Structures are given as C-alpha cells and as structure tokens.
Image (cartoon, rainbow, N blue to C red):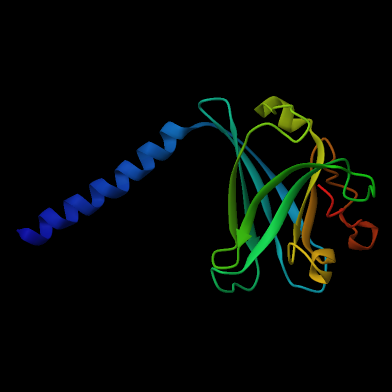
Length: 170
C-alpha cells in the first residue's frame, strides 16, 4: 500500500511540472538551426518561446561532447547576418553549460533598448554565435553559429568560411 501511495505522489509531481510548464508559455515557438563553425564537433538549436507575460525565452541546446559544469561557452545574439563583420551585438545570452550543453535566457531589452515581441523575432535581422571561451585566443573560436529571424536561408546553407568573428568590445 505504501508503494502505491509513493507512486501516486511521484506521478502527481510529474503532472504538476507539466501543468506549470504549460502555464508559463503561450504555445508559440520558433526553432533556428545552429551549425558547426570550427574544428570542434558541435551543432545545435536556438529556440524562442513566448512566455504568457509577453517576454521571450531563448534556449540554446548544443549537441556534442559534454564537459564539466564549470565549463561554459559564451553566447551572443547579434544584429545582421553571420557573415557581416560589422554586425553589432544585440544581447549577451546566458552562457551554455558544458555539463548539459544548454542555456536559457529570458530576453529583456536588447542593448539598443528595444524589446522584441514574438512577431518581431520572426523578422529579426540577426544571428547567434557560441564561443569556445569568453576571452583570449579561444574567444576567436566559434563553436556554432546560425542566422535567426529574417536571415534564415533554408536553401543557401551555412558556410563557416564566410563567418566573421565578433568583436569582444561590447
């Protein structure tokens, strides 16, 4: 009998997590592909979900070799195409954890003061880059990158040799 009660409590716990998750989001979601951009074997997805309060939650999920929780990979949302050497940073995203290869950021105001709605994100002229390190020579190594919003080119593909390195000057 005790095992049945424990089982019911566990099942209710799982059900409540799902319900609260549904309570946070409107159901609108965009997924953008992140491509391997260096000798390191990583790829991934940049997902944007609309929260019920109108804010956006951005999630980066990488696929590749995991490391320790102490390892993090800096991530940035930029204006413009990944090939544009003058593309300014729009927002520093939460670094990707080496442990689960994931990052979640609630997008507030961008560095220029604008705030993106879900509809704005669909047409945002931008891209995402995830770096190997936050400084030094490894900052120049981009693990993954990909265009988002209006820059997505389903037919043209991704060419790592055309990618530009972002400036560490924020």
